[in-house]
Length: 313
Image 1 (cartoon, rainbow, N blue to C red):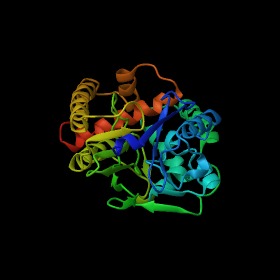
Image 2 (spheres, rainbow, N blue to C red; image 1 turned 180 degrees about the vertical axis):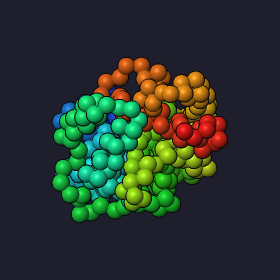
Image 3 (cartoon, rainbow, N blue to C red; image 1 turned 120 degrees about the vertical axis):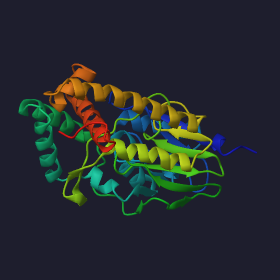
């Protein structure tokens, strides 16, 4: 008799992004389920088809597709797969907002980036880079058989009950999926084996486009996962995590050390802009990585101010 984890198959899918491969996971159960889908990108679809074929399945055999969050390396191929297979698509209630952003959010983001000290030319270059990636987005409307889920909901398989954990921080709609009895969890980008995910800048359309405190949310989400600790985690990138509690603690230690580094930057660079601090920490950056660096700098500033370790300025 095979164990549950032996019936979870990692399917590494190439992406056109610097992050490299993304892990999709086939759960060989009933209904046949895929967790995350890769980018809408021909080499990714070819790798998925080959991976499924090697296990004796086809895309058309899939009956459930679960997306951990809206980032394109995890969600981009979801619409095509569901339309082709007729599978039910499960996403968090916030995912439709993240995939189909409105123009107003961009206006708020551009204004904030300018306040951070980024020139208009650089902001324009950043958005040109973002918009170039739209070809990898899911195309068209959500499939008709889409189900939105929230924290605490359950997705049933014949031998697994995946409890949905809302774990915002890296993305507002991020979910992890855990069956503690079976000892397995799917952690997307929330918990990765070798890096701590970037706490990205987001502006909440349901809250007057106020900026989310991503790192504060991420730290709280680590607690959420720890309270529902699986024996093994199947992450969105890299190998399986066998010591989930230990990896959570490593993330906490990393965050604490980075907080101390940013605290020194903000205390010693009194007249520096957020962009100045980001460049001090991360060096010269390309257009895509400027946004990542600014996101992290703002997130740590928010966290330090929230903890009273840095005077608000």
